[in-house]
Image (cartoon, rainbow, N blue to C red):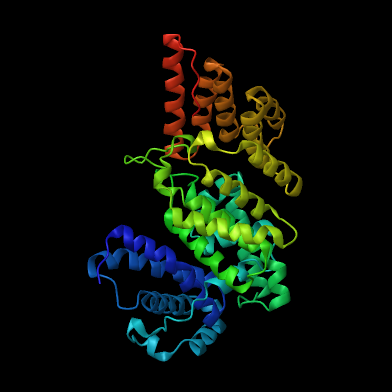
Length: 426
């Protein structure tokens, strides 16, 4: 069985949480299991492109990781007692070199691992950071960008979370019903962040990382099957589907970013849109409406519009008004400012952005500057808009976003130089 390197990378990203979850279920010791699973994934990344895929890739990874785990334990003389635990839990056939396909394939521990990373003994930021690392496979730099904190701060947070797990001996099994409900909100937030990182990568040369979004959708589908009557689980799944439906239209063949206003909507995945609309339509009448349902409703209004001009901005603004009351957030305010501008004019939106700029979390964020540039362009203030686009580009961490913002600044610079007063949305 052969795959190209890109296909193998996607497969390894999909299998990573399954392998780590299986190791923790069998052996415990999260910190050792994570190291061993990472070594197995690296070995596969080096060997599989040349040798081809094994018949059971997941079993191969678990077997190799188990061997590395046993080697780790043996090498630490001061931790001999752990070797006994590993030896008891690990079949001798594996340690002696049994076929790597011996691990059964019908037991996926990803969901149990997901709930384990959201254990109540961990702080909320640690739950999210650890899950992004263990489930999403994000680097510390990517997680730090998602939280808008320095990379060193995030590294310390992840390290402390592992220390808590080690000291408390936390259980990574799937929790019972009541405890599962308590952890569910943290799990939803984690999946939301993983999806967002996959849909709009925070750094690097790619606009999207599809494997991350697919994994977030897969796990959210599982959650929906477990809790079909939970409106927020349904809302999150709908939001992911309605947003991911636009993926094919978000980039040009050269990888450059295409903003929503300029996307070819015939490329949107109509099956995903239909499924997302069906989900959110069923969820909204069910009781208390939470932030994921409101965001899904906003995405549905965008997806139902045949063109940007057909967008029902008054309805979107009403939904953002509710969202800001339900779950206040500076990024919600930022998006609401754009909706206000589309309904009441750019000056009204710019007034909101001026207030938002006083928020330390947002004052120097590239998205605030990009939104302000867009609204200034709509108002005809071309020179200031060009400056804002350029400054936003300097602060963006994603290479495609930087290129797009520089392109917007250059376009307005040329427009100003020729004396054209026509403003066109970015």
